Amino acid sequence: MRRVVVGISGGVDSSVAAWKLKEEGYDVVALFMRNWHDTTGLLRSECHWEDDLMFADMTTKKLGIPLHFVDLSDQYKKRVVDYMFAEYEKGRTPNPDILCNREIKFDLFADEARKLGGDFVATGHYCRKRTDFKENRPVHRLLAGVDKNKDQSYFLCQLSQEQLAYALFPIGELTKPDVRRIAAEQQLATAQRKDSQGICFIGKVDLPTFLQQKLKVNEGETIKIPAEAESPAMLEGLPDNDITEERLKELTAPVNYKKEEGKVVGKHKGAHFYTIGQRKGINIGGCKEPLFVLETDVKNNILFVGEGHSHPGLNRKGLYICEDEIHYVSTDKEMGNGESRDFLVRIRYRQPLQEARLFKRSNGMYIIFAEAQRGITPGQFAAWYDGEELVGSGVISSGFNQR
Image (cartoon, rainbow, N blue to C red; front, side, top):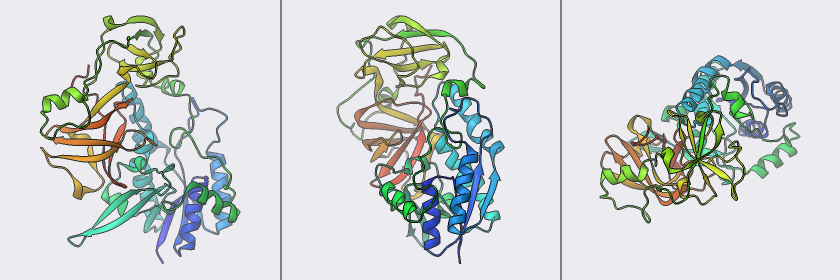
């Protein structure tokens, strides 16, 4: 009998994943991870790890499977949280959930699972895996979950073929209502428990307070840019395949606003605390429409903002990914230098997939969208899909014209 170690979190998704694996005849073992100790910035109304462990214990007792515990807090801090602080300090906005999956759940956690004799590692992600064979060698495909409202394949966009080989996603064929119904039918304690929110394994935090553990408050000027200021480069639809690299650079470069293009409307506590497209936390009144962050100049500690949802500075036609930041989940679909190919792309979780053309060049990847995209943010991940298959991903760069 094959043994599966399921990551049990105390939530309904991992609970039903464990039940489903047991129903399918696997030898199921549950492993609970503690990954964070510090409560700085944590909103006290949120449940903490002790509550999660209690629900995990109740679930495993109900299912009749053993529960083990591992503390990976030190490694989580080094691999995920320290990376977060470093990225924010550079004026980039990281995605800790994606890093957590790559560095913790399917790496360090998998090592712990093997110590328990696990042949596979299972999680409660809403996604699927399919294995094809090419030249008698397996190629593992990461597919979107059946529930389009809960599809979490984006969070796994940095997984490797080696990590996918031993991964199982038991609830990928289910919808969230199905999962809730099964949990209720099986009388699992997690049936009506709310989904977790916030940073992976930390919880919902007041981000400025959390970041101030390492990043200093540094008061600077907030500059309001008028809508008629210089806008990002645009074009209609998708570019031709023979587009020049210079034009690709223009379409993917940030605007780099200048102080003299706008007027000072207030102060902020540090440009590194903000992200492109952000609305909350600007704390400046007197405008007919809300203000949004257009750009953060960390070097000069200036925050550039624009008024209204339709401000042209919120939109970009494309993005750029450095060569060493390109990652393929499906390695057999890797693009060669000089090649262009159409994919569906998303730049944030739950964003509808967008039509785009990818251009691979020797220095990296240019992604040009059919329609301009709002809030393209350096440090976040762009993931590209071939239908329902997540093919690859990469960290969005600040561009060639970065400050």
